[in-house]
Image (tube, rainbow, N blue to C red; front, side, top):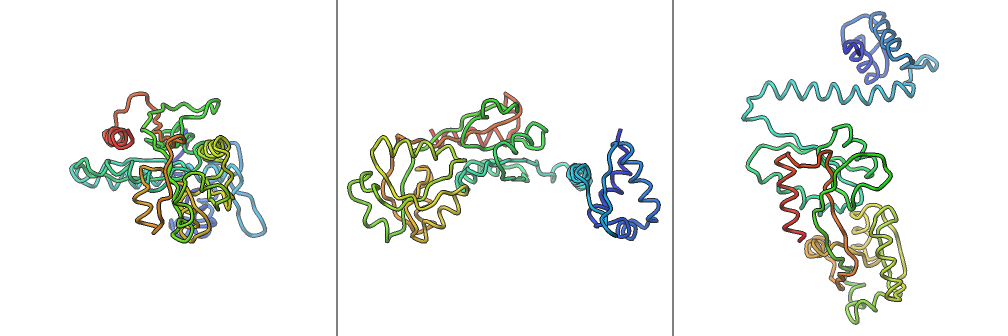
Length: 296
């Protein structure tokens, strides 16, 4: 079993950039800290630091150990803070992973009901690739992952898919572009400047297939991983862009763009992915139930 005192000395030394600074902070001699870290290295069977000139640098094992130590001691601080508070004041912690392809407005609308339960809530949101978030979910570091699709087959990570609903797609553009595209939709998109999600987004293939089926060939001006960045380019007049119809009105008002038209043949789906088949967390229940009403 890990000696957490040894791990704490290593953690402080790594965060402070060396044993000397850790010694000053902990009021312990450098020799003591060095000896405790050596015992930890013996336990792991691998060096945590390597000497580069006069400095110490983390090895690959050291970087991995630091990432876990960060979480362990951060959780320890949170535990101490929570126990010092009365149970009535202690907020529920909801750890949510948001796949980077999920539009920010959609993510907010999906998560908002958790704050309306009448109970104190502290939400921790992490944005990353779906694969990275599912790995954290499998380690119980997240309660929920929001994604634009179910767990990919063959990923080797266990997760249970809960369909939240789906939305059609709307095309919007800055006024300067929209004025020439609001007649004869969707044929007006042929040759029009267009911004689309990049290929990491499931909508990328669906959209291109729809264009081929309609014999429409827009001028692709850019592809984006981040939908918020795509909206910013669209707002600046680089090209028209797509948004889920469920939030089209909000995007129009927020970005000062105009609606060109909407289609139902291309659908954007949204999923909640949990580590358990049956959802027991009240905040997650509120999120899923509200989403199914909104995206019905």
